[in-house]
Length: 179
Image (tube, rainbow, N blue to C red):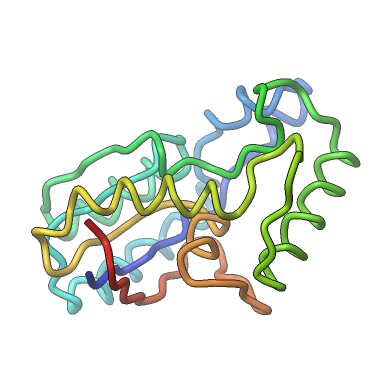
């Protein structure tokens, strides 16, 4: 399966930071208006890829990115819950920033060394990869799809990345063995 993976555009967390919102509330943050024009250029480039559908994370920053791109492409748009962000706490509880950063660092080390950690309070890279692959397996009847999601979802599918994929950027990815 050919995937054009788009990382969501630059979010605007100013209101959520000002109001000290929880992570769940931050997920409703819109895109930063100063960077939306960049997504129109990305849409023009992606149009050349000849994808058949767009599949998006349910988070506002991803959905808004998918909608902006889709204005240019006019494709069917699907929203998939399991293309969401990595879960810093399996119980869905609040994790303060320093602990979240520690868990993220630990998560990335295990991904880099292709080791699956046991008995951890956060979602492992293997669990994230499985849920993303389960979603994508339902779209194998398409030859090429656009996925609008998050860096950690891309990395779970593509493997550890020394250099990230910037907000509003895209990469092509081929996945074998789905479905």
